[in-house]
Length: 440
Ligand code: FES
Ligand SMILES: [Fe+2]
Image 1 (tube, rainbow, N blue to C red):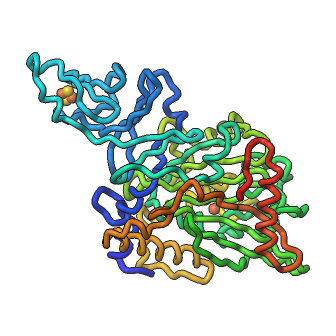
Image 2 (image 1 turned 90 degrees about the vertical axis):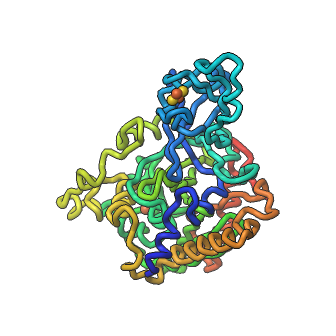
Image 3 (image 1 turned 90 degrees about the horizontal axis):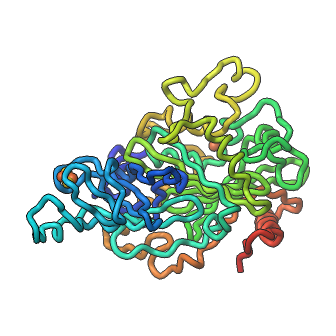
């Protein structure tokens, strides 16, 4: 457990907060490109407690500016999308993509007042279906060479979903390898051949064992963590008792993303992005090392569980996440259906909007959660001292040299699990023909 003041400092992310300052040193997912696909590409974005409006102008360029008109505060989401910017419908002030007011058509002829009117604006970049914003000071850093950014667009599918809780507890479920044996337990195994586009439905590594059975039968993983250039690698070993060890490698990308294996073909890189202190979006980029991704199928699978335009899940606290005690007796551990996202959502939302960490009791299996909080505290302290260079992926590190992260399930037959997973990863990368997935 931690103190209330530490919990506040780790979780709260609005302007001027210590953790908010750390998050603002990294590119943040702001929207899916799909959200701008309609005839009027203008959407509200609330990000790190700031209200913004994202638009694509006639030339195809993106702008992300403050949502309130600097004149008298109306909502620019209702603005007229014209002349490569947004025009406020109240008095016609016009703002370009940089947030600069360039015209005030009702002010006296020759007025130069507009030159001093500028609203917030943040640089934005589109990467394989996700629009990222830079909300930090100074020039934005280059993107790391993660697989989800290196792969061509056909090999990456992006989606998002709303979770009504603080971002840190959302992240902490993703760096907790122990819960998969319980929360996501299926009491019966379905045919792995039916598992396309879903997590934990494939066969485990090179075995004929469905992942569902492996997780169920071996619930006490040996978990270790190590620091990496991007954040932290988490290794979970499940000893099968016959000399074989199942090795599952997952990662935390500092400060709020994870990269995990989804199937033998795909990995998921997923951010847990604060909307504000009490809500967050998960943004997932599913990246294939095999065939191009079947995007219509993956989108349709997920749209069945979400409502547009806010990507709110249909199962939520208001309907007890679909909880069915009969199902819990015979089919799933949670009684909340077969979609494991709902299980994770229940876990993080049922804690309360911001988990009260003064009352928790962390065990051995929470090692990655403990390590991550230390890293976040260290980053907060470093920024407090003005030592931005001490943050992960900052300070002279060339992001273009930060690869992977490797995320996979492998079987080690000789006890050398480190060699097993690195060889498994290299083999998958070498076999990838759709794009160059190799790492020097
Ligand atoms: S409130 Fe926007 S132009 Fe007046
Ligand atoms: Fe999970």
